[in-house]
Length: 370
Image: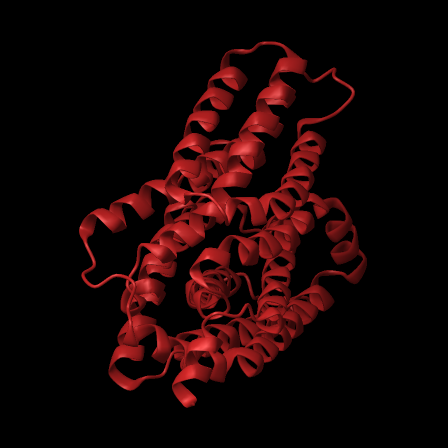
């Protein structure tokens, strides 16, 4: 009887867990938006603008390296002690704590010199924020059967990209709160949603992990699987970088007189991607992910070439939409593809490689277009 129930548990889609992960991802997005809004302000107010390049480079390195490292550690701890949530819990707790410490430092900056410690705390915050990303997102394999993973990613993608599309609204909100209160709220959001996700998914994850390990989908993990996941992550990052980093600068340089700025077009495309990705996720769940991803790579290549060489504002917008379509498909299919090609015993490490690779080109573009 218990075996039948265990098997049934691995065939159902757990919406409560999915929604709690979506809430956590929303808190992460809001935190990143707040960081990007207030980091330059803090640097200027404290007279440490000479460290801007250092923090951009540090952020890029951390975004690329910490997710796979955290994933590797999570898999090792799971294998050794049977505990999966350790790295996640440490990351959530540390991030919330650093938020509160930074809020306190900002609040006391008028009576004491905090210019030496703020950059250090920012680096610590960046590391902590990336500790729990790969453990959290790799848990989706425990929330749904492999074939339904694109549906789960569609929900997560809808939430995160809609928030990024609404960044001007979020920025207005954090500006209204002010720097100190924003960091306090950020700590509460990360700590609160992290706690809820932990409570909701803890037992479910451990049970499903145990069930999946009994019949691992990948008996022997090959290096080629990691390379394929790395390539998918890198190309996903190309799509993201061109929409978020390249497009606003490209329009500012080439079409400054156009009635819509590159930033508005970028936010609009992200909103279209969010809704479109959610709508097509069930269709992607029914097709061969490898073929879908290869097709999206070709579409991405065409879109990037058109954007770079178009020279026409309307063709540039169409090119950006083509890139957005490829970016959407890669998002919906990329993470499920990675998970399906990873052993349960190495899935968090592999997801970390995927997430880290997706930040390589974005980090490079952010540095070039600062």
